[in-house]
Image (cartoon, rainbow, N blue to C red; front, side):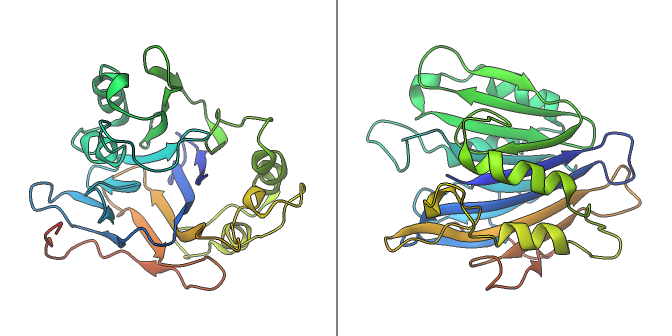
Length: 254
């Protein structure tokens, strides 16, 4: 159950601040975010080597896309397309509204259930495929949203119940000064009110599943500043966040 934290402030100089922990099987191979797709040179995203898609990325227009599994749907299934393709397809668009409109028309039967977050400096949406019926488009209002395998800000999720108030009272990151300290501490937290380590923000278990990486993103209001993209290729709190290079050669996805 991955977690994405979104603070959306459309009138601010930095209207989009995002933090994400990726929870996955530790044996699933991946590369940290970069320009991995020669046919998509404007995209910086993590590369899932198992299926060729991504879990989180941003394009040079400031559109951010992230995909999360719904409850009980970890892993691939024969006959279904990879949900990681959705991130790349979304990032082919110029902004969140056009991406949401295009992907809402996908055949839901082709994919296992998902939550797909699409956001830019002005708008934010979650495309929800619950496993039955059409894909539902949910527009997110300004403010703080936590997204996991359930609904946005879902009080039924123990992780959201614990951590949304903590993010709400935390010091807001300052991308200009490079200060993400409060959010980084929360991403590294292993505290769980239920006693189940899978309800913590940083998941550490005795099995092959847990938090494998983390990312921080800040999208500016205008072109005079560049998007800030930081990534920890390992558990937050144990692995430093490093800048994802803005420029660099594309690698092959093989």
